[in-house]
Length: 117
Length: 110
Image 1: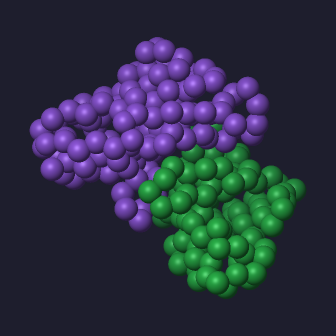
Image 2 (image 1 turned 180 degrees about the horizontal axis):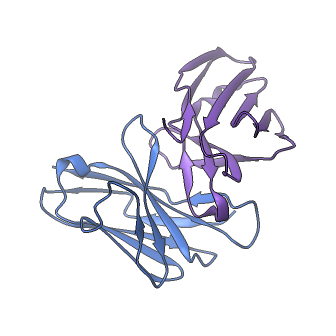
Image 3 (image 1 turned 30 degrees about the horizontal axis):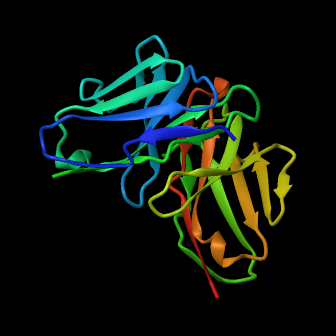
């Protein structure tokens, strides 16, 4: 299946700093990528849809100025958590659809576990 | 009401048991449906897509009931390695958004 790679897999930072997470589609081009967040024992919550060459579409309740998304190429989307606070500590997962075949299922990156001290 | 709802469980079953999970969705316009498996602290991995005609993959059978807006997953002959959280996912028209249920936890014990 399609491969999506995410980096870093885990990060610990101080409150107030910014953290950038990268998501790459390794063997296909992804015009659209999706960013999810998952708190312990909870569902994956869609944060935003990242669109190559245009602005991301954010879900209701997600602050676009806090979670900056850049999708500058067909294989790379980045999520920057700005001025991170302890409540931003979570598991952030990116995903993409491989339009070449299949039934439209999402392929996920390995996830990035963020801990804000 | 949540867009996608699942019984969180946990389901505790012995090896060899048959277990079934259900998932309901609220958007009648949803077009594509999936079951994912998520192991602890890992990303979700696709288990199977769910088709209107139902589909089977080895010990796993998925069913879709559009009229009642629910999907199901049946696991036969449970293995210890089946222990995980099972997420149902519903995709809207055009596949631009996929919404996940909260997951159902399964523990298979020897």
